[in-house]
Image (cartoon, rainbow, N blue to C red; front, side):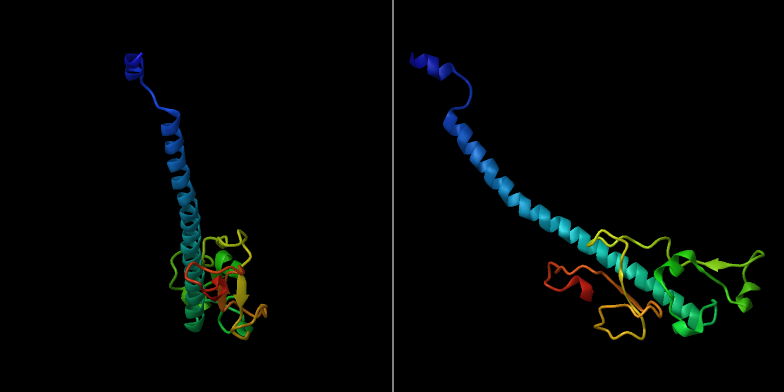
Length: 163
């Protein structure tokens, strides 16, 4: 009978329970780490999108200050909205001669308005140059700054709105 137990191959119930317990502990430890990794990826995407839109606003302002594009005088040289950066603006009449080809030359600053990774919408918070920095509503005169409307906090403890 003793030789019967020595020849048998496989796991005992105790070994299976110990292995299952170890797997459960490892899985429980991995879930919070994966949540942090997902949040970190969204934060990276948010920073990239904000940088992209702010650089587009700055490029528009620079060209307006240099009188290279046509813009409304009441906007202080900033774009009236984000869609203007996507649709583009006409070159000023003096720069049309420098542009190659005939017809109107349109300059676009963004391919598209990115989706806010924190709210999963295309609805960004905007500030005009006339708004107070801590304002929660857009004055609709122009787009001076862009921020997320998410009320969440980042991994470093700062508010996403303050980025």
